[in-house]
Image 1: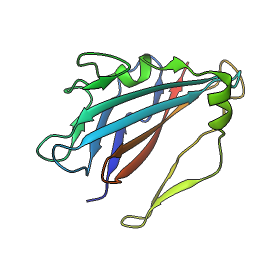
Image 2: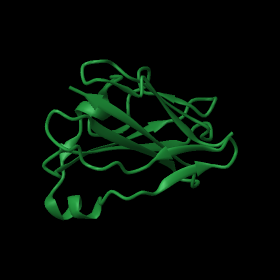
Image 3: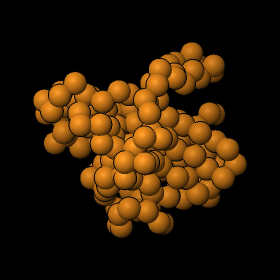
Image 4: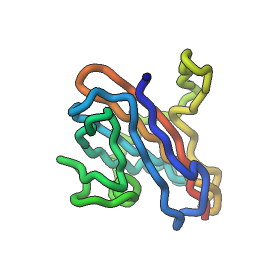
Length: 146
């Protein structure tokens, strides 16, 4: 099974809890989840947290604390609220593009790097990338509305 990130709901108001699950990793693998947002002013906010995949090769953010990262303890929304403002030189490296991730196994397409919202009242996209030390990669995007 290929690595995947499931976010539910994928589009909702900012105050709605999300279920974030990582699957398809090797049991016991250290999985790094990076959450990145670009706001209307083009600032970039990012969190990076490392989790250990369970015996089924999965990580449930609502049930597992990161072993290292930008927050401590079990918190289903930790990857979102623990994002920190990145310096301008890092923000310049996180340029949005039209690259799509195509999973040949089921022909689904997920946007990897969304553009900044048009203004402060527009939805903010958060894109997730999960990787492990063996090269598994998964991506997903969620939309936060105000």
